[in-house]
Length: 315
Image 1 (cartoon, rainbow, N blue to C red):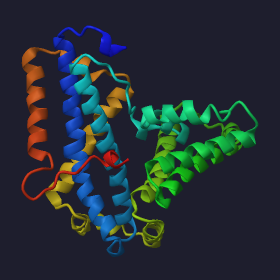
Image 2 (image 1 turned 45 degrees about the vertical axis):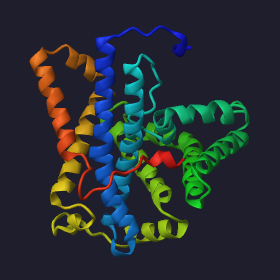
Image 3 (image 1 turned 135 degrees about the vertical axis):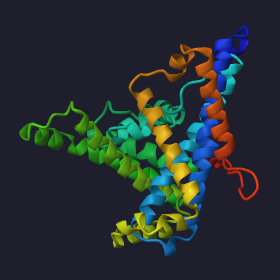
């Protein structure tokens, strides 16, 4: 047990823990809380929005919930590391997942592991007939939905993820056959990118039910999303009528780009904190100060803003 061990002061451990906490605050108060303004505004006034406006709100909710919970996890893990306790990684770039099963290996790893060890495996896991395997998957994801709350929106969200996995497994032989016939290179970047995009679309579609207050609202929003094709919103300033003004909207977009670059580097195996630690003192502290000032300036707090409670505090 780590709590019974002696914990000696370590500058490197404290530095890494504080940097992880700093990144967590960036995810939470710069990205998640700013995205929440747009998401809340659109979901609360959904009758006024159509087509790509609904899709953009859904995409930003995917970003919000990731930034919110990954930020919370990073702050907790970093604080524990400063005090000498090592906690398990809870997120591993889930939006780089190539299928739904891969997504759940990367998203909320502690909870996913618990459901696997204490629900899925005791039910028989995958070491049984296909019918029972699919039953087990359905039970796990329906239970996961209910774990989030006694609301039909969470049940549908969980059911969709179970459905995705079952359909994906059923269609796998057909997909493999098509790839063989068409001689599709499954090792290339474009193939992986295609799978990442499809997986994100499926996950993001399910997030609409997770965020909506009730099933009826979610269905209406989905109908409105597919009712029109309105790409002109990118040119007529409609994007700035969704809760965020021009400045805040582009601060959010730029911050998401920073997050994507950092995540991509880590996905490629680059350990950013270790690489930063190798740099000269002056360069390191310039980066530290830039990060701190960026969070202080662009964090969502103070007059005119309300700090958002962590989403997962309600579960």
